[in-house]
Amino acid sequence: MQTELIAEVESKDEFFERLAKLSEEMAAKHGKDFSMGALVLAARWIAENRAGKLKTN
Image (tube, rainbow, N blue to C red):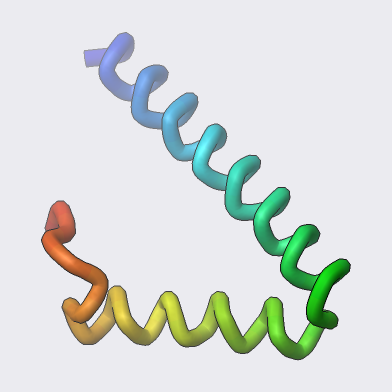
């Protein structure tokens, strides 16, 4: 069980790193407002189950 937890934490950390890099790229190219808006829109799509098939907890 501990190994599964460590693997999950590492996986989540990798996604946060990718998300941070993408956010920085969007902000550098199109501004902070665009970057924040895109992330909020993505969160909304996830909340509304419009982002494709998702794993549910």
